[in-house]
Length: 262
Image (tube, rainbow, N blue to C red):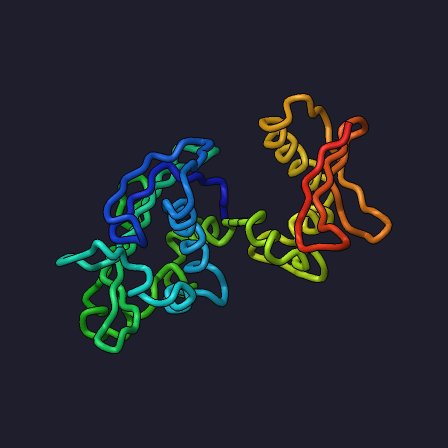
């Protein structure tokens, strides 16, 4: 199964504070805006897709984690109240093109129910729901095909890619909860981010360190090389010979530091 895909377009309708948006996504994207302008809501689209495909997740749980359909649906929604997501993806190593679309609402008991689900690959329709079986048994619309291993084989590459998404909302959460750095495993807010890197095989670790270096050089152009080290408490840090970058909580107080020492 290939995970070598990347998003190239996002279309949202009635998703949180986005009534209708169509965005082309480039290789690198930056979201800039004031507080409460919708940056996190936009990024949550990627995490929602991850939750749909992830083992132990699925459609019902993904909507429930976000407070239900009413909490997700845009307040500006009027006559047309379905929530719709459409994403287009392209292959990194080939010319493949994918499209995944999902629309949902809630039934009279406020349980999430699918209105639409579709998958295209290179213009060929692999999935188009609701099917005739869905119409005869509406309970089937409580689950996506994306989450069902017995039916997602034709587009399992897409499922694998969604499952691989990582959304690390590090700084705001760690400022509020600095203890996240200790004893946490697979923290969705990135508290054990460096610990996860430290535990990977050397080849994988070196590749990730190069990507981190490239990102940090945007803010610190004089940064040349970095390495991963542990202090006497076993806490991992990023370090360079003449430019030391430390990300750790203060021993006293409730704040995190990111410091650069030359």
